[in-house]
Image (cartoon, rainbow, N blue to C red; front, side, top):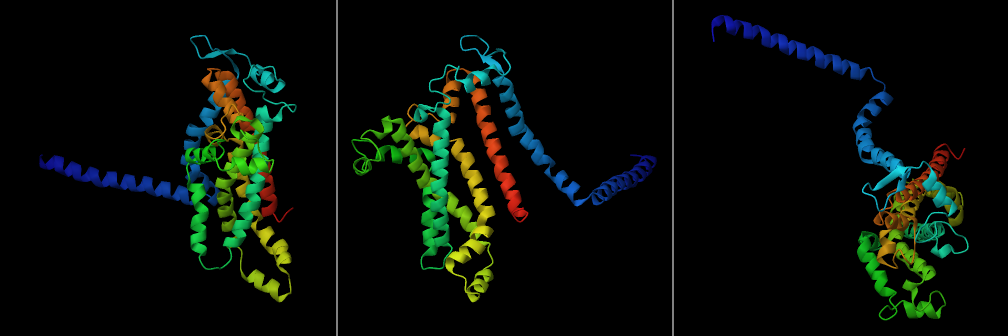
Length: 332
């Protein structure tokens, strides 16, 4: 390299560095002028991009499939565009389904009543049990740490293993739960072959596992309550019931609503637990119906049922969010 080339290169490098510095400084000044809300949304842009790729696009694609006819025998798995015909046939009972979509005359063999009965009964009992366990674990007593570990164990069991446990428990020939419950008149001698008893088994299995989840979320809310509030209440002469009504329940309600939201969504989507215990033929939930239709290459109908489930979850989610917002605003 000649002396002239070296001089030219030495002049270009500082100029390039100053140009990069000006660009970086301009970008930094632009970021500093953004409001806190704008900056937060900018930081969330990667999350929104990932959400759009992994969730919104598959949702839109499924919605498009739900507007097409089933094409079981054709080369193309998706048939012609039929608009809302799949939804109309499913909601009016005209669709050819293995089990009825909605029938009040046979609620234990119909997808919507079975799913709603499962959700309401399981979530209600789990909430009561979880609240009770959380109140106990929030107290100071010897061995509380081990009690919390024992509480988590059922929740940590995989769904397939959980289903196999209750499948064996309610087998007439080897299950120890069939005899006592049959004598009490709660189930028949063949609970896994009966829709009503199968639903009972699935609900019991879900309560055994998910009560711990409810307890953990509610316990987190209880531990966030300022203990000095109880000291003031005791000095004022408030009873335990009055303390619960005026301090514990109002302050833990936001955490309780979040726990209810998660469990309600999970219960509405239940599939693995039902399939591994009584089976989808015995307890036909909405998710079982989707899997059955999809396995039969009826993609349009399966997508329509899936969208109906999503709409149901969306309505419940909106209701929960409205209630949570009211609690944040002081119940207004």
